[in-house]
Amino acid sequence: MCGLMLLTTRNPLLFPFILTFTLLQGISPALIPPPRSYADEIWITNLTFHSVQVFDPETQGRLAEIPVGEKPIDVTFSRDYKRAYVANFGSNDVSIIDTARRQVLATLPVGRRPRSVTLSPDDQILYVTNSGEDTLSFIDVRLE
Image (cartoon, rainbow, N blue to C red; front, side, top):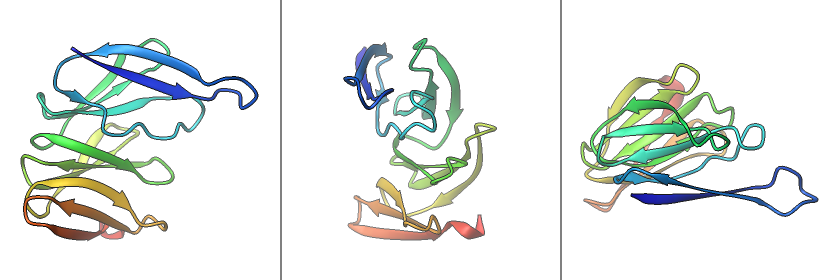
């Protein structure tokens, strides 16, 4: 078992709300996105089960499990939260997820051992660092 701690400010005038709950082994809290409305969802990668899991921070219940490539290690989101992009370290690819339907739209090959993903400020280019060959992949996500 491992733990996840969530800090969120529901009201800027109050102290941050802190929540801790236990997760199954293999879950790696790669990124917790800024909430659309405070404390919406927590998206985390699960290296053991090759999935992204979505949790409700209020109930600590799992809302969804989305199968992706092998050993997902990082996730980032479009500004409108309609897409999630997951770096799959073990399968050398990136999964693109429709966040509303919680389904993989596409899986795109990248360099060896992708480690992190981030979007350009205009949400048009996805940058992927490939730790297995010290390269950077650029993906035009407007074409997805």
